[in-house]
Length: 190
Image 1 (cartoon, rainbow, N blue to C red):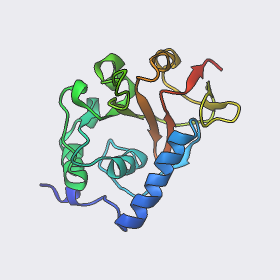
Image 2: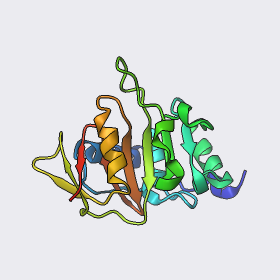
Image 3: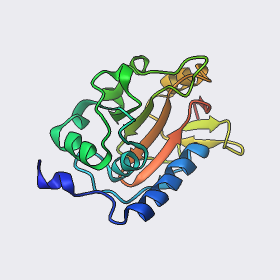
Image 4: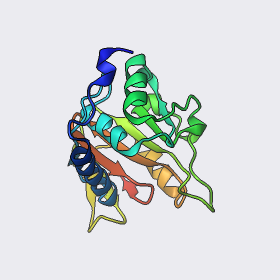
């Protein structure tokens, strides 16, 4: 085990985890709102927000799929040490998946829940270069009128919304910023 595996977790775990959990839930409750998420210092290529989100929401009962460059020894060891989350080699077994958009495709590989249990779906953490409140127009629960968010593929996210109440939920991360897009959110071109 590398020394860096042991580093990068929460400095003050109860306090940091509480702040991070609130930011993650606020982002999901208010789609398109960009939150600041700090607390972890994960190994590359994980962003600070993505690492903090994983520390906050993953545990021994949440299989994580690492896609593309995120599937590296440093991230595998760090995630195992700090969360105990098992790695899901098959996308169909993932509760969470993390990577850049292209590495996470095709979205149809992930569980979308069932009619009886729509909550048995995956949450994808999409690492991006930046997040801005521009681009796609978002409407739906948690949004007073409309919101805007830079998204990687409006058509794919619109198709995901059409599956509601089934479908995938998304977190988008860039640096220390995080935004969420639950499956209940309608996505339109700006």
